[in-house]
Image 1 (spheres, one colour):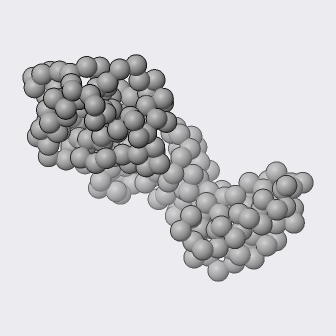
Image 2 (tube, helix red, strand yellow):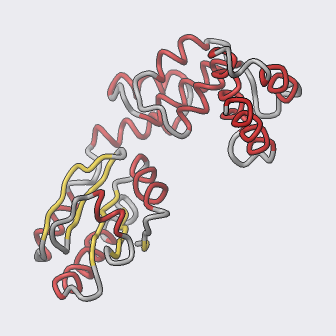
Length: 234
């Protein structure tokens, strides 16, 4: 269980839901039914032993999240998987109803098989996973990264088109388009060469952005070159 804020919702709920189903409990300290429902939700989620996670959002302190869910009343509970709301209910519920709600989020035998194949990580297993679930994000990204490492960049990019372009998907797509690594010795030279052309040349601008994606937000060079890009464009 975690307390989630407007600032952390995207990472701790939306992104996290791509790995594990997340139950979002929208509540407030003054709400009596919320106090009744909260412990019931916690017990039901705990019974899954990590297969489902619980995120609690105080709507008084986090109005942006409440607005995003278009909350009309609380308690309001939503289940998220793959970045999308897949189930939910409003108002207090009993132990049996809540347990059933949470249990419906548990993976099926097919989903477990797909996850096991994706976790194996070799090309044959990843392709087998995608034969069962063509849009499995983890398997798509992992296979695309293997393809890039093998120089099959066009195939990797075609594969990545199956899923939304966010997070790791952008990074691997950038790798495929640039054939660069974060430790590539000439990456700064490439950025410097592109910088003077980014305003007039869309392909240069795309390559520049891709190289920043490859370096990643944790690389100290990234914010420096982002500022240089902004200065060139505006």
